[in-house]
Length: 263
Image 1 (cartoon, rainbow, N blue to C red):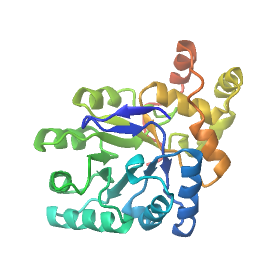
Image 2: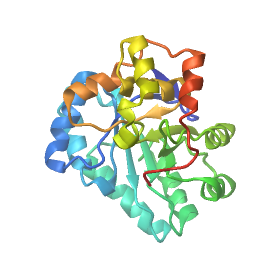
Image 3: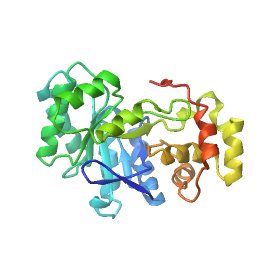
Image 4: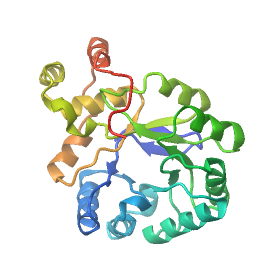
């Protein structure tokens, strides 16, 4: 596994497991399989209704808690107090003494108040780091301008069709990493059969999914592909033994449409 360093000095794995749309009844098994495959970054959220099962799988893994990086998210709240309550509820649901990262899941009407609740949770030691999800433009800049702690990352839709080529440099200028949700474009547009990607994959004896993830990795983007299939988990994490050439990276850049597709 490769790691990158957040602006707090903490290291985060470059590839993790996302558990969006995994039913609670299947989450514990899925996370346990991911842990066996070598995953240490697990991404959940209150909205996913499976925080408890993520916590159970980690607790029962037999691996020390400090070897994991657990992310969760609160939905936007109308006030500081409501956000603080949701943070406590997520921490309790996962059942750990702390979370590695807490995000605001998407922008709302009280972003600054919500983020200040995250800041206070970090200062209290409830969470080690804080950040954002699906924040762009004005919403991101508002947090930079009005809050004290720079978000460690912003989790956004990012894949070969939506590469965030303009936004990633803005994040990096402020010390915020980009993390990709739906890094495989949710399989839309028959992406796994695109000749351009298939040719590159064949040249490296890899799959198109591995090429898509490797492309983001080489751009310094953290990814959290979702799957419940153990063989896919192993495939998605097996991207550290090859490197795309500059020409291959440039070819994949031509797929970028410059806008989100899945939100």
